[in-house]
Image (cartoon, rainbow over all chains, first blue to last red; front, top):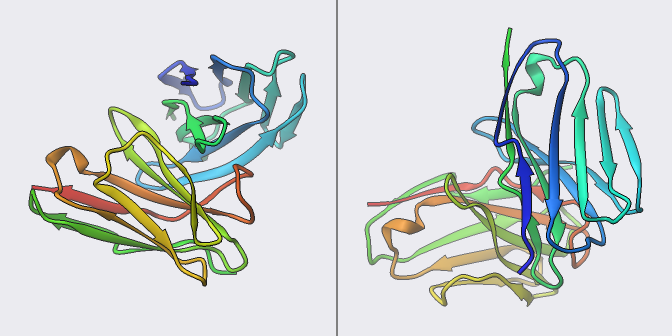
Length: 110
Length: 113
């Protein structure tokens, strides 16, 4: 079945530094979604990308979908303590719901 | 509007017992999906219900089952509980079938002892 890989698994940054997480799928995706889960919380939908090469921004967050629609990235500029959490990418696997990556845990040191 | 409501929030069960978890989706959302989250395996798809019918099922044993009612509320049941079933069970709703940006509930934390 489809696999969605995310790197890195953990990322420690100083507050104010930038952060990037990468997502790669073993198959071409019709769309890719990003979620954030705060410690002790539940995943919260951030965005969905559909078009090849698409780039979307949400304040300090920039999301990209690769030209081949098999990879994606999330970049956060000037991290803040409120950015702490685990960031997941997810892609639809045919009729089998969403396949989630294992996530990147963002740890911010003040 | 109210979010996705899952009950109970926490549950402790003994091996061999069965458990039923409940999920009320956002009003107007007709699709409900269930996921199991564990530290080792991450988020894994269990099943999706739409219009009271199971549309998709993940790779879980038959001990895991679910259903959806006419008001879109959903329940999932796990029979003959095993220690490995300890996990956070998350319900997610969306307006229609398929994956279009889920709204997750807070989850039910199940501990099997």
